[in-house]
Length: 321
Image (tube, rainbow, N blue to C red):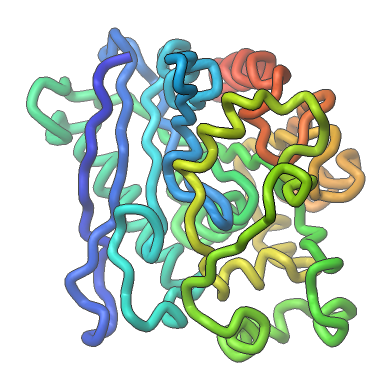
């Protein structure tokens, strides 16, 4: 893998009171970039920034790094920080960072990234890759935003959704939001409900150590070195999209409308409900793959099953039309 390129992109038009924003993007190229045919555009989940896709152990082990492992398999990898997280701009009024605004920003950045890579304008020394196809990769809330982006902008030829389902996380919701007959009815009121639930626009979730991270770790199989590396990727929460991701049926209409190949990666001890029920949400796609990671929790890259995931995903990517 070549050295990581750290870039900033204009996320497109914004309201006057939050103008002048930028989105931080890391790009990793394989050793032979001209041979690459796939760009993986990665969106992190709630409470995480783009470093989630490049977990590095103190001893130098890069087997936890999605970026390192997928570039070693010949792919170009890019990871974005959502507005408000990591090295991207953080508007003072974080309540303006709705799913719609994040999707528009990420879609604009994705389009610029694709064009610059294909035309040889990304950075000095990076050749033009005119035949590069784009695949969206999202983890947890980032997977939800990937679904919304694909529905709105058709940015990719396929999507990879890790640790996600349209079931939501109703067990974390207040009672009045758990039994919504139509999750779309609450969308106009997301900011109002998010204010009530989170109280501040950039809250930090303190999970209280390993025992408080049962949803992330799921079993004793999580490598302690990866658990330590995950701290560098931990960030605040964006309340409005976080709330949306918890709603039962969160993005069910958009998921059902996807007509591109879908790869679902789910840990055996994940947070998505019964894994084999998840593919049923993607009725518009003629190519849905479900891959289960044995003895893995929600943060898949922490577990021994990650290597098999990287291998299986690379084979799946090679088979895309």
